[in-house]
Every structure is written in C-alpha cells, then in structure tokens.
Length: 515
Image 1 (cartoon, rainbow, N blue to C red):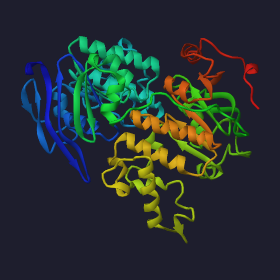
Image 2: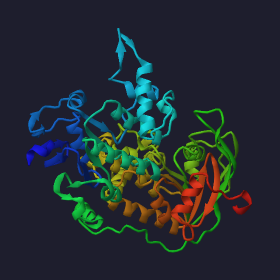
Image 3: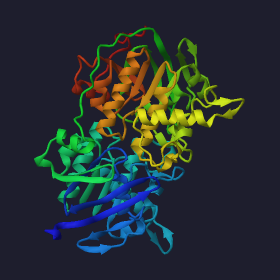
Image 4: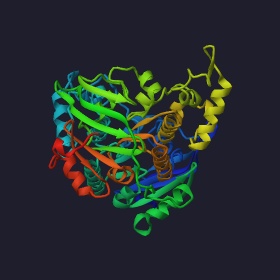
C-alpha cells in the first residue's frame, strides 16, 4: 500500500516562538490524487506545505518521496524533486514583468544568451491551453490580484512539476475561473500529477478532492475519503462545532445617503482609457450594497478612488454630505470611512510592525492612545488585547507578535477588527472574507450585518457569488468600468447575475435610481 504514496510527511513538528505550528502531523499523498488540506486560520496548513517546499525546516519528523527519505533544504531542492507550489501570498517581483517572473530561476539560455522568445512561446501555450490569459509584458505592480494569481499558476506549469501544492489558489478567482481551475486540476490528476490543495471552501473540496486531511490547532484530526463524508462533517472536524452556511439577517431599513458617487471616472494604470467610466451610485445608512463583477472590470480602481489611493479623472465623491473627492486618506478616515483593502499585505498592514501597532494604525493620534505626542503603550496593549479576544485573532505572542509571522487568515481578521471597531459611518470592504475558514466567515458576516443594523452604510466588493447573494441588500454589477445593473438579491438569480457580469445583459441608466 505504501508504494502508492508519492509523498509522505511523517510525524512533522514545527515550533515558532509562542506557538506549535505543526504538532506531530502525518500526511500521505497518493500518486494521481487530489488531496485537500483543510483547517482553521492558523491551523498550520501553510506551515506544513512550506516545509514540503523547503521554505521551513521541520524540528522533527521526516519526508519521503516514493518511499525514500529526502532532505528538502530550500525551494531549489523541492523543484529538483518535482515539487511546485502556488503560494497564498504571491512570491512575485513587482517591478518585473509577468514574463520575467515566470522565467525567474528557470531561464532558457543559448550560448549564454537569454532565450525570451522560447520562454514566451512555452508560456503562451500553457496560457491558451488552460485559459490563463495574462499580458506577459505588464509589470506585476500594474496588474490585479486575480491576474497575479494566474502568474503564480503559470510559474508552476512552466516548471512542469509532478507534485503540485495549491495554497488557497481560488481565493481571488471568479466563479468561472474557479470552475476552470478545478477542471485543470482534474486534468493534472488524470495525467498522473499529484496535488495537495489547501482551501477553506468546502464546496471546492467536495467537488474536486479525492481525500481530505483536517488540521486543528496544529494537530492532525484525521484523513477522510470525500465520497464518504459531507460538508457539515468536514466543518465540524475543522472548527469543533456546527457551522451555519447561510447569513441570517432581517430586512434592511435604509436611511439617509452616506456615500454618494456621481459621474466618477478613474484612469487605468495599464491602458490609456479610463478603468472606471461615468459611474454613479448611492449607499445609504442601514444597508449593505455589494458590487459584483468579474475581476478586472474596474472594481479595484473604483475602490482606490473612493478610499484615496487613486485620484479620479472626473466626477465627485461625497461622504456624510462632505466632498471628499480630493481629500487625503486620513481625512476620509476622520470623516467616517473604514476600509478593508483587497491586498491585505500591501495596503492593509505594516508587516514588520507588531499586531498591537497595526491595530491602532488608524487611531494612534486620538487622545485615547497618545498624550502630548507620546504613544500610551498601556492603552494600546489593552485595546489590542480586547480586539484579539473579540475577533479570535490567533498569534504566537499575542499583541507583540510581528504581523508578518501570522497566517493570512489571521492577518485578515486583524484588519477586519481594526476597521469595524473604529468609529465609522461607511465601511468599504473588498473581499472581506478572503482566505478565512468557515467559522471565521460566519463570524465576519454576522459583524457586517451588525454594522448595517447599527445604522452604518456598508459597501462590499466580492467575487464570491454566494457571498454577494447572501449578504447584500442591493447588488450593483460592474462590467468594463460601468455599472450595468442594479439587482435585488431576493428577486434575482445567480444565472441572471452572471449574464450582467459577462456583459450579455444590462439595464439602462433610467432604470437605475439614485436618490
């Protein structure tokens, strides 16, 4: 039986300051299978896979490939063994092009000269074969998070690895892209490749995986055959309790307009045309408005303009009756805006600061946290400890944990805690549950509804259709930089929403009302 295992990670233990990330974990991967790795945020999934890929060294335990003990000191060793990894937090050089990032470390040369054309042709073949189109000449810093995810997948395809680790690969993909990726993974498995698939999305596990290993607080809870289990059973194994998969909320009771956007246009960082074109909408107190659409249709640029990260080329933005079109980010914050950004590491956190420092980033100048220009560290510590407990932010050393060392899901929880706890009138949230486990998603959704019920205006950008349908009171659909539809989640369907998202259907401006 053991001969079927292409990879065995046996009794792996890894300890970081203040936390046992992996506690005597065993995982066995069969040749040609898709093996899901499931667990709460901070359960040790990414750490375990980082050990397999050579980014970390286990404190004890061993790794075998095809029954033979192997030593993986670094990613080059992993690649030499045919192990590739699509990382949750992208390992890309922002000032390099897409082509340069994919080639990096595996550049084709002839007589010492770089063979760019050869590499380009090979990448284009994979890109077309698997529907992973991306502009090879664009700089990484200029493309969306969804496009960066494609680059990571293409990097692995380019290296022709036989053991493929996908760490939260669908977190930033659209539903259609997820379906395409699932089919790609099935094709990989049929061709004999072996896949370890880390995800929090139980539907994806049920749809594509053969077996699933569940981790909880660093320990292995067990491995099950997917055909013999259910979503409910997997969620119980993961969080140790029953989880609700639907959002319970009363009907909205919208009040006065909090955010008013009129004829807003925002330039594109890639093309000469505007990424957002003549967009108008309102968000009222006591309602959740979701902006739906396929990634790359102007949502990122719209949020950048609303939050002050990008200057619009035309139009106005009004918050609480005040024109903030040209206001600074701090002034928008003081006027009542909270922001959960799309890229948590780039725009949401200072990774080398402590957790407590990050939790007061938007408030440290307030009297509560400073006295005559000096930080009140006792107040900061007390505040951070409260948020850590309230939002179940797991970190090895509590408030003094360096944020870079925390799991992606717990980094996300820190941002959500900071922005929701701040005194605000409007919450702008982009993919607020990205990378969170089902228990954390359930909690965040409850917090968003609670924010709405407290009379706050909530604007969410999400690529998760289930989330859009469940959490929203109104849905605005963006396509090619324009609002093409305003839908009621109670009366619309996922299919109709998909038609608007693809541009096959649109409402006229007269059909959409703005108070």
